[in-house]
Image 1 (cartoon, rainbow, N blue to C red):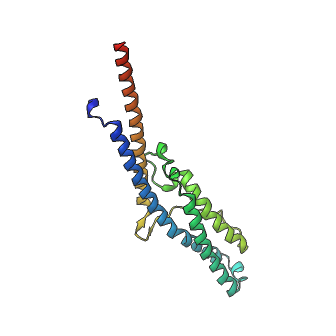
Image 2 (cartoon, rainbow, N blue to C red):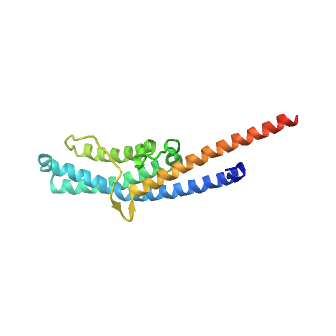
Image 3 (cartoon, rainbow, N blue to C red):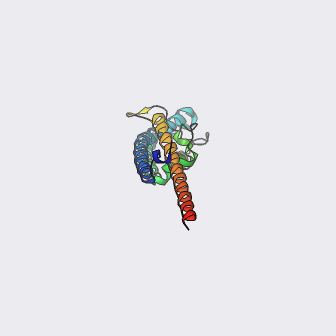
Length: 194
């Protein structure tokens, strides 16, 4: 392919704008999916801890259990708000562009992004466990859900996310190469003319 067949820097920059817009759309879908899952995650995990520890569970009165369930509901709402605020910065979503490769499949492989999500969610879970003095269990861990939530499926969104990040990185690299080649041509021309 000759250099005249290569896209111009302006065309590549326009493509980057489109890729970034698509990444922001994927991010919005992921955030909506997680906003639905986070309260359910807290409820699932605390119910599991309650059922797994019958000696502890028997110490809670019905009134205390109702209060716990109310705290789970409000904790889920609060964790969702905090999680959404933690991942509002688009820079977190673009952070994995240089590391994007074909092996990346899970959204959690963007460590900066998933850490921001997981820290908030696990912090909310741990706070409720501590408030009610749940028996010690394994460390809290929020993993990306692998089932449909609403009409969204995080594994598919994750694949699209990494595919777009790879394309973004390749396009940014191509811009750098095109600028470098253009500068060399200009410098050669200047050399020859002076």
